[in-house]
Image 1 (cartoon, rainbow, N blue to C red):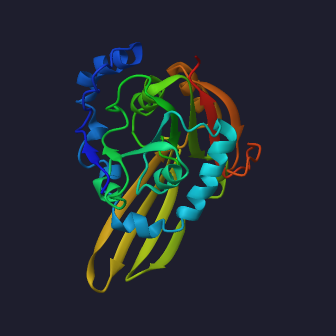
Image 2: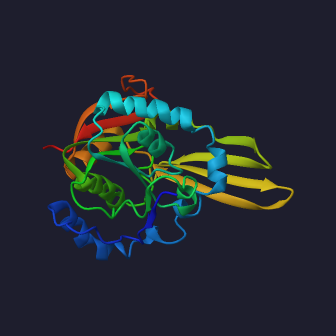
Length: 279
C-alpha cells in the first residue's frame, strides 16, 4: 500500500519553505481561516464520493492515457523531477504517470477518492495552502476543471500562486478547464441517468450574477433515501485565467482546445493552458 499523508486545513509547509511565495501565502493564512466558503458545508467537501465516481465513470484510465500523451508532447518526457497531480481525485492520471516512469504524487481534498488507489503515493489537503516546500516540483498538472471551486476570486487565484510557489524555476504546468463560451452556450439544463442500482436527475444552470456554472444532482432508488449534491464552478474567461497566472508569476506559452493538440477557439470543448515558471 502506498503512503497516504493527511494535512489539515491550511497545513504548515514542509521544512525549508522560506521563499517569497510561501511568505506571502503564510501571511494570509490567518485571514483565510475566517473565509466563509471554506466551511464544512462547501459543496466540494460533500460531493466527491462513491456517487461522483459512478457519475463520472467515463472519465477513465483510457482518457488519462490520452492526457498523459499530451503532457509528454507539450511539456517534454524528462523523468528527473517530481510531478504533482493537483486535485488528482481517484488517481487515474497519477497511476499512468508513475507507470511511465514519472515520479508523480497525487494531491486531493477527498479522502474517499484518495483511498480508491491505496497503492499510489498521495497527500490529502487544501489546494489553497499546499503542504510542500518551495520549488520542489518540476511539473504541476491540474486536470478536469479543478480550478474555480471557491467562491472568492482571492481563494481561486491563491491556487495559482501556490502552483508558482512549489514549481522549480523553469518548471512546467498544465491547467485544464472547460471552455466557458462553449459550455454556457450548450448547457443541457436537465438530464436523467440510470446508474448501477439507482437513478440520477441532473439540473444545470449558469448564474450570470456569480459567473458560475452550477449543477444539482439528485440521486435516488427504491432502497435508499434521496440524496442531493451540488457542483458549482466559476466560469472563467480566457483573459481572466491568463491574467491570474501572470500575476502569480507564471508564463503561459501555449493554449489548446483539446488533448489532441487542437488550436483553442470559441467552439473548443476545453481551455488548456500550458506554460512554466520563469527561470
